[in-house]
Amino acid sequence: MGFVRSRRGRRAVGLALALLSACAGKAPPAPPAGFADAADMTHNPALPFHRVWRDRAFDFTACDSICIAAVDTDYLLSQTWWQEVGRGSKAHADAVELGREFRDCVVAAFRDDPLHRFAVVDEGVLEARRQRTLVLELAIVELVPNRAVLQVLTLPAGPMGLLARKGMDALERTSIAFEGRVRDAASGAIVATVADREQKKSGLINVKNFTWYGHVREILAEWADQFRLVANKAPDEVVPDSPAWDLLPW
Figure 1 (spheres, helix red, strand yellow):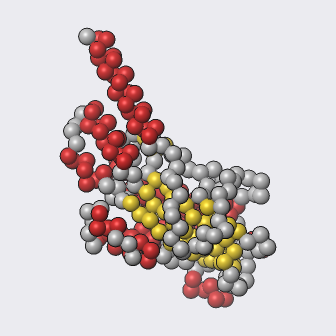
Figure 2 (cartoon, rainbow, N blue to C red):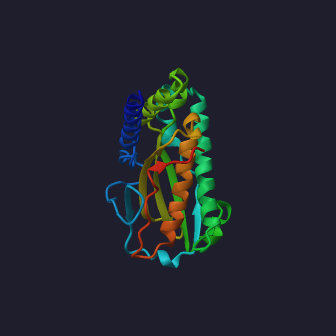
Figure 3 (cartoon, rainbow, N blue to C red):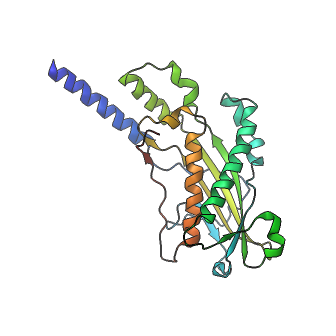
């Protein structure tokens, strides 16, 4: 009898590990949405994003201020994704709120930067500070809320229920994608572009699994910190991507 329990235990552990492995890793790149010109963007292994481009003739070291523009959500609102996720008209308000939160995260990351590489300039005073200033323009171009919220109450309780939730979790993967442009405020020219998509981290059953956008908000905060790290990095430095695992239950 003890052997049977042990064998069942091994099977349960093996199934759990298989499910975790199936949903680990970075999300694949999102199709270009058009906010940032994808023609010249490529993957740079030194940066934590799917695709980037920069104007090699532009002297980024001459800039010491940055303005974070309002995050564009028009690309989301023009799609029909909200019809499939059970949020109805609330999904529009969700997108606008997440756009505001994304900008707030980026502003906070640069303002709290211990190296103070860039001073944050508000849009209201940008006209008087265009020299030596960059403008970061971001757009959320894809959003897949946590559809597990809709289904979790239909699953059984107990260990096998938890495994079923992990299996569902691997198929219904929360994700978000952005595209970004960096402008020289003085000339208005675009001097860098970036695009990335991230998905919910794999790991233990997490309280964020039971909220619509808990995982998305975590990704927004990670992106904001990555922008700060990239702005501070030395030419030969590598900024690693965020881990694909999250073992904390909150």
